Image (cartoon, rainbow, N blue to C red; front, side, top):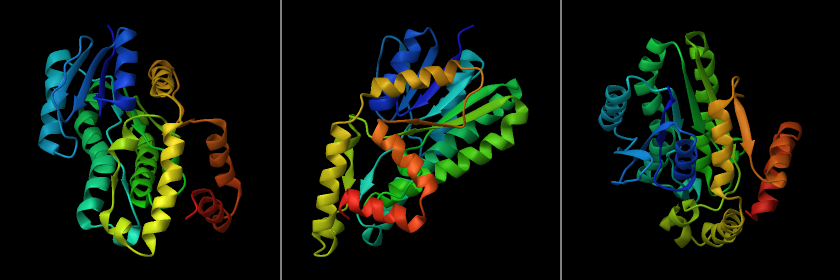
Length: 266
């Protein structure tokens, strides 16, 4: 029987490209998103991953319809740019709640079913920003650092139940993520941070808009769904950004901060 795959944030970008690629391979694909969607090959369910009741209802609907969930792909996320000092509690809660707690909510809802099955696979979307702290994207990086630690610990806890866990660390991609980024009004208006933030943001947006196509990541996701032994971490990026991950492992912390400050003109 074809695998049953559940993908969050499946209305656009990575999530939509991955859902289409997996559906084309004959899998039963359910996509979760906050707005109503229809697609000939993707079974959409309306769900906000920040709402635990909605998450529970969506997972229950999939299990009722198919009897199981074989693969969970936690892709839902957003970005809020600005200075860490000036971030509002609402911005922090939205950033961490969507990117990190949304992932946690989905895992906690799906894992009881995977444990009962004694098999399953969970793939969480991290980022290169989860490997290094990006200036003026600090809470985005914090949310992805949290996913890194959560995923590593989860992989150790559930391996004995036949469940494999992995994370994907994308670099810059040309998706709708850039246009939908929310930028801190307080930072833009601040006489100290404002000019620096605008300069840094211009570099970030240029890199993203000139980045890889989401279909590149979708094909990697297909391989991670189908491979027998899934690697814990997979970097998906251009050569320059892949090298930055390698450099992070060998230079001192102060040197890495200097590299990031220079690159992003922070």
